[in-house]
Length: 235
Image 1 (cartoon, helix red, strand yellow):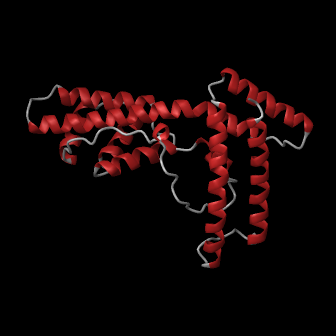
Image 2 (cartoon, helix red, strand yellow):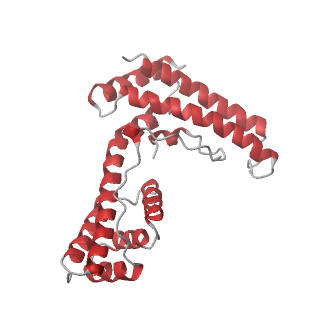
Image 3 (cartoon, rainbow, N blue to C red):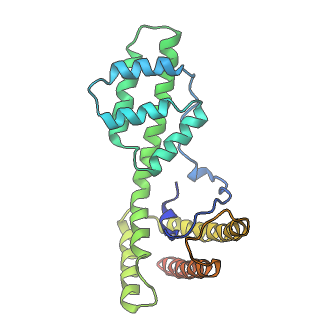
């Protein structure tokens, strides 16, 4: 979940790029691989535990539990996070289901259901923690990319926003700069993919020419380069 994904110009076509190798301090939230309970067993516990509960959270938990294998569960939670559907209410709902499973009659089925739900609870907890850390960074990225460093008054606003965020606003300067640099690297890869996709007729540019689209993307990257320099100089 990259907080600077907001930097991608919304009207431009999205091109899939290679995934960034995971660094130890940036690894995706992961819970231990659980003992897999069957979907029917999970649904029985969830349904009996959550009658009258928050309808949206119950629906989201049902979507997670119906995803399939553990890799599918993780992918589903990541997708739900991008949609803003991994919430404290979901965590409360998952915990309620886990408590119901743990209170059930002892046996292999009970143990498998509890293990599966326990792993989901851990995954949701880790994802929520990552989202909470990401929020200040995403807000800063949203703010500074609306301003033009070439305009003196807006440059002053950018510096003020950086100073506030880096001094105690919950954003690490080096971490933020690293994300901006990563965005620029990803944008270069996307450009190459976009050119190939257009050549193969796989992308609709919505009436714009490839030259026009690439010009907009280059301008966006130039502004990002300026933001990197400004943020770097705030040390």
